[in-house]
Image (tube, helix red, strand yellow):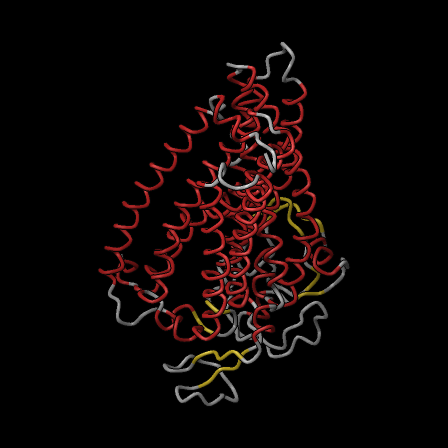
Length: 487
């Protein structure tokens, strides 16, 4: 039971729990915002009452998810100061700009235009309303950019210098001392660090995939019920839109994943080696299935050199193994695929990274299969042939991208351990020294209770919306909504 007295471990668990819960809703809100904008675009073109109902439906689901996402993210911000005070002091100069920009340029923009979307449909011209809906989604995607700028800096720090308590630059920094901090010297170098673009594209594409599978699931649900002609029409529409967006984004994930793999190989040698459980130097294989073994090759079926190819387009590119990097490496000249000059040492939990990475890749393949299932469900929607089994499979499809997203974040965040800022600040040095284990345990319990309640409320509300489905408004309201510009 020693772990109950370990403040650093408990703080890590608390933050992981908070982020896990928060990241249930952030991907959904960003992705659902796109589908709400697409639905509003469809209504803008058709001016049909059923398309108006569909747009209002997506806006309601998006807004409910957005509200819970905002509420669950507030505690995450506070924990930087309560549980991770040393971290906040060290990175404050770097993180201040993107977090402030996220609030001022993204959250406020999103909130203002969401207010227009919720309360001004019949008070402004349809084209302005449509623009407002797209700006809501654009602001949510922009919000993700600012957060990922900060997160990417933690993975691949750039554009900074470390200074002491007096503000004097340190010629060499190898160990955290109270008062030292990272001072920004080049904002654009820090913001556009080596992993920013790859991580942003990878993340945004993944959240749109999640929303696409949610659209498919809701469409399949309405086709299973088949209670009214409108529900059947909405089922086909949601399923078709989800299939189209899902296919595009799954294909785009290939180049985005390649970009991400290249950055990890070049900038984070310990994480890259852990992803394939590679302890010795050599060309990195890709394991179709396997189990990592300490200080040895994983047991399983592998394609030799495939991971090296994914990162460098060369099956023979040699990368350092965990035995090379674990105690520190000061010269990577022998490894052309590695761009950093040195690494201070340490390796992440290899088995967790190995399995999470391969689960994420495997789920991408399974999602392709699910798109095929969705296609056959759509094709058979008007036939008497019973396709309930197929429909139920599609209904539970959102679990696949959700698990893939969480697996990817495990690889990203746990993969940089033991560093909270890769190769710069150790996680154990970042924790607050004034917080006791009892205080952390109490907050963990309170967060679990409150978040469980919040999750139950959200699930009940969203399921009620889905069960009720889009609702065609009465004639007077529909007539007002269908008025064209200038009428």
